[in-house]
Image (cartoon, rainbow, N blue to C red):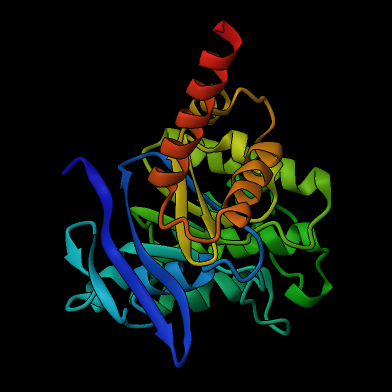
Length: 270
């Protein structure tokens, strides 16, 4: 199975609000896939549908071959999820938080102990095992939250705005850990509104107003738009979409852009 995630026309409607509108994409095994967009663009809703937390209104999808509509309980056992709120228990120590999540996944005590040693070393939490989570700084809480998400050796790591509210140094160190995990074969799906983090991703999907407007590698985006800054590229997409109210898709946007460039070229040659 080449793709870890496949979704087609995935849609979620809350009352009169269409939070996610017919999005389709695939995530290859072992890659870091970034879903980038501003707050309220549909990133977290997409993540929650893939994790089996909420049910799609329409569309289909699979995660590691499991149907997101019918087999969400199997999916939950195969993924590690880390939210921007870190989901830690402040009165529990580092060790106790890891124990708690290991028990949630039904791990044996010896397996939890072995895995804890690996994760504490990976996250450089050595010496902080008995510190209560609430006493840790934002960067250390982030490391612990990552450890909790990885306790059961998931095949896919889902990160929902994982660096929100964390200092730049901690953000950089966090992404080093994510790159190491990807190199070991873990598939990573990350949502973020920090455009500078996109360079760590193998591919980036821009999402805006609940719709995917472009998917490409960072280099592919640079080449396509003739720019070398992801934030500038995203702003250009959004600007063009905002200027064309009747636009139905990114493909139409791209087609219109090429027509405009051709007309400009023909004019220059006159």
